Image (cartoon, rainbow, N blue to C red; front, side, top):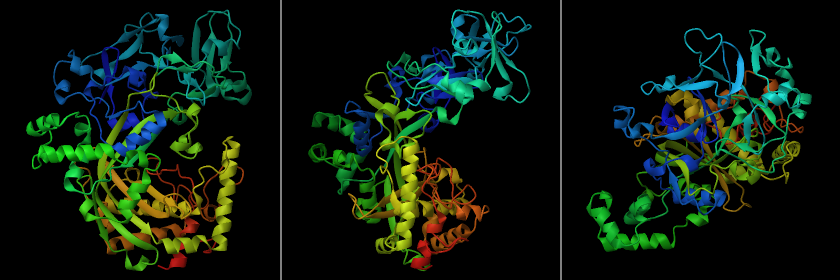
Length: 621
C-alpha cells in the first residue's frame, strides 16, 4: 500500500500496519522523510473495499457515533499502477501523509529551522519514491550537492493526544521572546545522548543542553499544550495539559485503539448464512430487482440456486432482526456460545470448527477442545492515544473520550478496518473445577492481593473508580495458561511467537453472560486463503496433551528464579503481575490482549515458592 505526500508517492505500508503500527496520527520514518499519516477527511474512499461485519460495526458506532455506517479497508492501488507510468493518477492511490516534524537539521552546517522558512527544497524522484527528501539548497558547507536534511529528533506531546514540534526558540531563550536569530543544533559527543546535544542561538549566543528538557524542573518550565493535532491540521482549544518531551519514534508517541471481532454466524439456514456473508452488497439494495440484477450478472454467484423471492425474504428478515445492536456491548458472548457449543450445521467458509476429545491426562481440567479450522477476524481503528497506552486504563473500552484522539475533524462516516483469516485452538476449562479452585481460601487471598495492586495502579494514575476493569483471579488463570501454551506452540508449529494471538473468555457466574472460562489461541494472515493448518494440527488429543504437559513443566522453573517466583502484585501501583517475567511468561505485545499484565505461573503449577495456588495440581495431570 502506497503512502503519498502532496503529488508524490513516498513509500509503502502494509494494511495491517495502518491499524496497529503506523495509523492515523502516527509518525512514519521513511528513508528520506519523516511523515505523519493524515486524518480520514483527507482520504479518498473511492479505492477502498467495504468490509462486512455487523457486530463489530455496531460496537464501533457506540464508540464513535451512529454516523459511522461503513468499515473500509485502506485504499489499495491496482497492481497495474505499479508497473505503468509513475506520472499516472493511479500511481498516487494510497494514504495521504504530510511532513512531520516540521523542524529539520542540516547535517553539514547544523542549521535548525522549520520547513516553512523557505530554506529547504523538496526533491522527489518519481521512479524511486524512497529517494524523496528535503535538501538545504544554499548550505554554506554543503559542497557540490545540497545535503539532505534530517528531522529534528525531539517533539512534545500531551495525554489528550496532541503532538507538536519541540518549542525550539522558546527553549533556547528560556521563554523570553524577541530574538529572531538562527538556531543551530550541535552534537558535543559521539554517544548521541541528550546531555551531549545542544541547541544555540547564533544572534544572542544563548544555548541549552537537551537533557534540561527531560529533567523534572525542565519539564515544569515547558509551555502548556497548544492543542495541536497535526494529523487534522488544526488546534483544539482549551487544552491546559503539561507538555511531555518525547523522542521522534518513541514507542509512547502513538497507541492504536483497535476493536476486533470474530466472524461468527448468527443465521442457521444455508440461505440465511449466504445473505449474512454478502450483506455488504445485499444490505444496500432497496428493492428486489437490484438483487436480481446483482445475482444474474454474477456479482453474487453463490445465490444463483435460489429464487429472487427467497433471497428478498431472507434479506428483509435480516433487516428486521440482525442482533448486531444486542451484541454491541458484548462482542465475546456470541463467540463463546459458538466455540463452547460447536454446531457443525452452522459452519461457514469463515467459521469452520470441529469438536475433539480433551487430552486424557487433563480430562479433569478441561471440558472441551475445539479446533477452529477456519476463522475470520475483523479489526477496526477507532482512535489512538499518546503517552499512555490503552492498557493503562484497563482496555480499549475504558479509555475516557477526552484521552482518545479522533481520526477526523468531524464525526467519521466510516472507519478503516482490515480482515484476516486463519486457524486456532479453543480450550474450554471445566467450570466446576475452576469454581472449586477459586473458592479455596488461598485463592481468595491471592485474588485480594491482585485487587489491591489493581486499585493502587489506578490510584497512581488517577483513574476512578478504582475497582473498574479488574478481571479477577479467573482471568489470571486463563491468561497465564494462554501464555505458557503460546510459547510451547511457537516451538512446535513453525509460527513465530509474535504471530500467535490470544482471546480470553473469562466471566464469573454472577456476571452478565457468564460463566465463561476458555482460551482461544489463533493465528491469521491477510491472504484470502488464511493459513496452512500448522497450528490446528496440534489440537489433536495426543499432541495437545503432550504440549500442555511440556508447557506446564517448563513453567515450573524460570531462569530468573527465585526472584521471579517471589515476585507478587505490588501495592505501590508499579506492577500488575506476580510470578511472571520475560524469561517465562511474557509474550510479544501483538500476542497479548492485556499488555503482559495479570499473569502468574504460580496459579498454574507449583513453583519454588510452593504449590498451594496451582490449579493443575488440584485437578490432577
